[in-house]
Amino acid sequence: MAIIGYARVSTAEQDPQLQHDALEAAGSIRVFTDHGASGSNTERPQLAACLDHLRPGDVLAVWKLDRLGRNTQHVLTIVDDLHERDIAFRSLTEGLSTEGAMGRAMLTIMAAFAQLERDVIRERTMAGLAAAAANGRLGGRRPKFDTTHAAKAREYRDKGMSAPEIAKLLDMSRATVYRLLSESAATSR
Image (tube, rainbow, N blue to C red):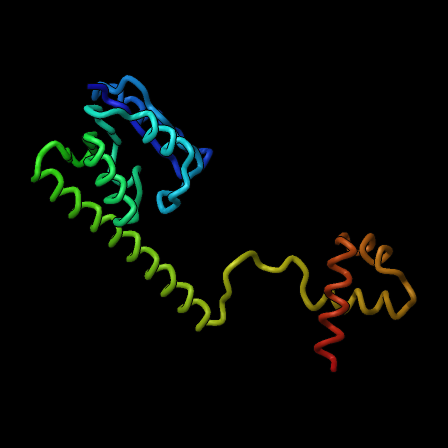
């Protein structure tokens, strides 16, 4: 029996060392790690390699259940596949193990709560965006150039200047000049 670990961080900037330390302390002889992989993404190369590496009698260990995935169906599919292959599963933080019937039942409940958390976060985000839009605020970066810049660009164009010349004077790209001029032409109709 070998304990094989799987770690995942959502962004390339995050450090999986905490997960590695916990997995090694739990007896993992090897740890597969996905960097920059969302838990909701079912295509994770190191997870696939880890699952391929596992043999009957082995144990797949993760630091926390949400490292395996936040989608309940996906997590349970993986765990069911492991069970059919006679491979156990452990989640260290939650203290879950599929080596018994109670552990499998608790895993199902924990995966459902992970899915619920993800859905609630999404609902809150959507509600916040809708409230902001209702108050006239849109998401994203504020425009760098406003109607004053558009008026100045029109004035220079009317004096016979080309878009590259206007761009240089106003310290903006040619594409921005063209966009400002086309937007101001559309609003003046």
